[in-house]
Length: 541
Image (cartoon, rainbow, N blue to C red; front, top):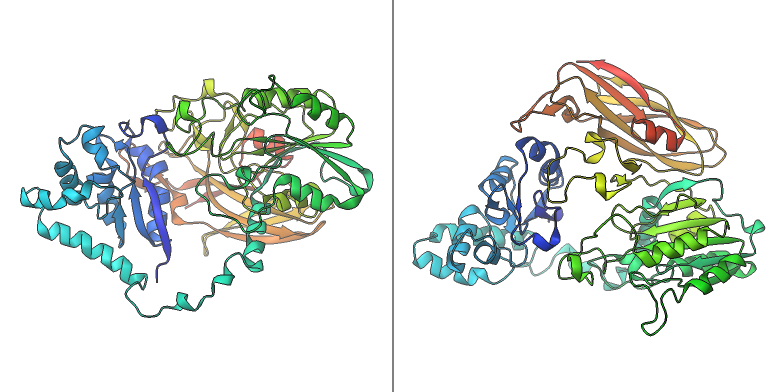
């Protein structure tokens, strides 16, 4: 049976949505091999994905759904599945990229390159392409064979498969909802906490839950979603956990993206109610951010002016006004940010900040469990949060220079790999075990709260081809009781000892390496924000 699904948007697809149908991505050999391709290589070699989907763009002049370079990489990695275009991407060959002149030529180009399946309608011209001698019957046959092979692997031609024995009531069963809740709890990132969290029920009689994402199901599910059996918004989760002894007030406060909530009202029509409720409450939970109407795929978004892209790293103006006026009250306030991307929430005056992402159907339960201390937060940022868009290279520039934790330490609001817990977890010792190619660390919970944290291993070589700053090469989630100490072994792949040269060749990184172990990356800002330091060990190979 199939081991995994489809690797989408292969590869170097992360630029402007509005331009994607005609955009030509220019990426160096080094950046491709070092940054853009490794995740796809791992998906194919390790996850054994069955399908790969090409993107709309061109890559260094070639349409990604008919790229000799990308298709060559798939062969090099031993890919044994099928290749499918993104929807109507092959039509872009002649309509937008102007690489071909007709649909027939586009169909032939894609088929000859190895695109087995067209999501769209261009392959209705495949027969004409064969009749005109643009593609052979054997090429078409090979594409069909690969597609039928996948259907056979799925058991679609069998009278009975093991999946037929799974009853429908397994869907959204308690076991699955438990996993959903656990994922939400472990993914939320505590970015700031001056001691306000966790909330103590015995000290609080009222909470104001404020903001456009407070009672929003869209803030739970992001883009591309199914229908949940019983979603819990942030407001509902807090109400359930607060119980009858704590009064929970609610005000929308502001529209998600407009200057007013009601179309016929005056601007800032929700601010007064939000301020009144905040003033009379012991604590404020300010739920702001985005949803799929503001960041999403082109054509599936209400953000028509930018096709799903944000214009800057700030929240919409109406939300910024709400945040500033609520924080000006000086009430104990935690900001909960729902978004799938880097945002500067302008909440340096907030007592606490939680990055909730789009946490799924039980996101409200997960948030409440974290707010009230039933769960210690343990998520880490998988991306860098920048301070300002002005200091970031142009969005259409695919060079890594000035981007990501490996290439810059400037303009950083919250660093890659950063995230707090309600305790203090620190790595106090580490050494390299050459027999197992592993880093062994001593981890201490120096606080008074049982916690989970993620121990991270970074490596840097003295090679001139190495990235300017250390790269992540291993990590492990560790559950550690308060006041205890654990010995943890983290395996390191052989790629930790390699670098990529300007020709895109993966070569040895030399014989001198420094490994860093901690609960964050080894940079001054990460260590300052987390209150811990990374331990280093030098290794000679």
